[in-house]
Image 1 (cartoon, rainbow, N blue to C red):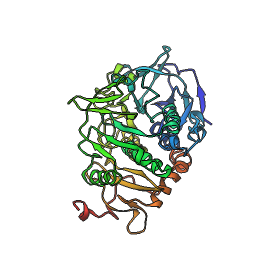
Image 2: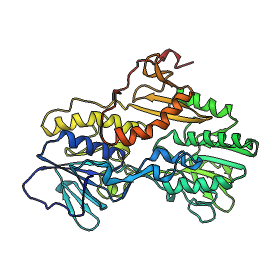
Image 3: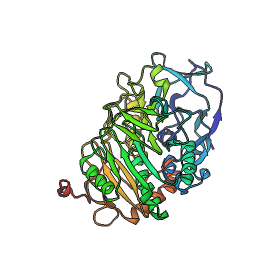
Image 4: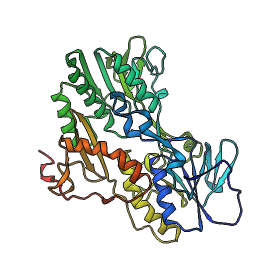
Length: 429
């Protein structure tokens, strides 16, 4: 178990070099645990995280359908961190970058030699006018990107008999951009199994021009929606929710009535990022997309969902990031050039219902393609194809998350995307 502490180290004292990690989510925890193995005793590692529990967020998707119990998706933060990482259980007010200090909300200060921002993003339903109105919120309007939201949606689904259902994405980027599509497929599957699919008018509503951001995957996923009788409403930039009429309205005048709205609100970075003048308009820290060094700083990095790299905000990205980041960090603190570059590698399982799933594998430059992963021909996973093995792989990921990824143990998968097993000649098919 890690050593939790409420006392901040004093500033200006001689001693070890100080690495401070803000956030003990997926990226922050993996980084702290990996650094604990790679940095010698000349370093002090501090993790700042106010939450008591670490959540397995991919499990939120299945929670409304009875796939998990809440206890299976939570563990104490302290139990997830290496013993070398000192845990400070307080909130950050701002970063005083010029003074190399993190200022806590109680006035305490944490001096650092190097800082890593890993505080992720948070769904903000308050950013959509009308959404939090008591007439709809957590009754006919829901989200599933928090534990409380997923549990409330489970209750709503147990009582829902049918009608007009909207699965809605407010804006990009969001955590796990395939999750709303997965929820749509699982809703379709649930009502088919219950024999009430005819009582459901299901629409997927997105600000994108298609079902997904990448053309090949967008065509494949859009075709899956059509085959299931699910409507697709594209280029929908939300203006507000009318709680009295239970209608979702866009800026271009479109109105979509609903009996049940499952929305993904705007995802914003931590508020302290704005107060620290480290972020953009979404409170994401602008970084070099290959090294994660914050622009304009030589001692501040941002990783995971907290940064603005142009790829999916997904756990796989955090994992592949850490492989590259650790080597770069060791070079950087030794005064050498950073020689490793992250290529934007991401892969995502996409639950499609009936005990099947797809797998997407892509990076900054290469969109999802058909083929096999991770081995050519052998797989065992198939890309852009619905299979039961892919579904089992998604379910098995929870064990790998708690026991391999989060502790910072290596997986036999390359951090850079490989074209082995992919079929680019079918990209335009």
